[in-house]
Image (tube, rainbow, N blue to C red; front, side):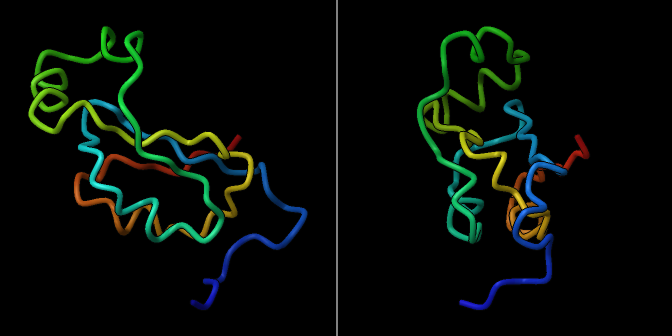
Length: 96
């Protein structure tokens, strides 16, 4: 797999991927395309579930309560592959 044009080594931490948990269906596309292992898909935390909208709670139930989290967001190099791969358009890259 070739690495896309993105921030160079040592330039991580300038951009952070943010996942909209109301939109995310935990389909794992972000995990599959991220060359820096920024994402993981797991069961939604109870505190995050409580903060979901009504529609978000229904989506969470229908999709088994799985959502994407960014435990290694500090490794993001802003390549944008996750944004393009997400079928729910639940990921945005935000400057820190």
